[in-house]
Length: 334
Image (tube, rainbow, N blue to C red):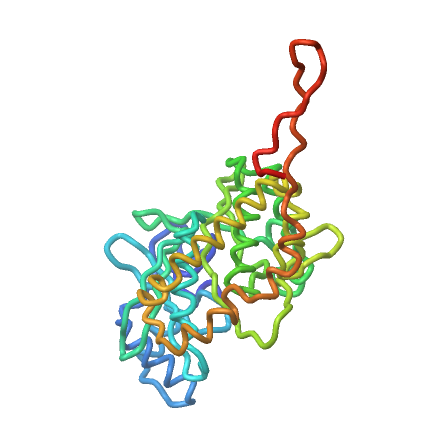
């Protein structure tokens, strides 16, 4: 019954038709203005007219706690993330800036664009589960990859298990490294809502390929230390702390030096690009000040970072003309 009522445009590989021949079933024809207004009416408990109710039902079969809509346009397909009346902070704009920064640090991230409708900012995130002609690509969540119930079992998912699964079944040998880069980026921007349903892979019937990052949103934060939603280390470690993350880099096909350099580069890019990205996301000055040092680059994530810095390798011994071993000079003057 759920598949029959949800429409063909829903997230997921399954569909239902009344005949053996597949045809694309009803999709929403509501405008973004109408959908944003309808979402606000629903939250306020106000009635909707029947046509808009039907359009909203078909458009919002994408799951999640916040209001969303599925829309098509110019041979591309999007999840539209709508503003909520209950927002106490600019959630849509914060996600827009995080998605932009993810792209700037070099992550494989879904294309996103911030637009306005009904006087509100709306974030469009391009869907990776559709081809240009509208055909399905089978995407599976990290919970499904690990054989867990997507809701009840997702709490037991871990990053290191996802990495192991990708190493064994992925078409891209760098997927595990990409996953580690997403972990550290989530730490930087305070995205602690990185649970197993917010990670996905594309399944071609034989192998997996890590899907682009698609749900990266800085979370409300009070105080300093916090944890990620999924375990990072095999011992249960999940603290949002760079020094701790780097220790587990070998589980993600990186040595500690590579991991350290990756984190340093992400920090540098965000320091340099934050102001421009925040302005493009229409984040007000007061919200920028609240985000910087709050969820974004909170000082707690750098605890023990200098202590974790890889020590210079001991220079190799060389042999002089008399056969005696000498040391290469220390270029740092120490």
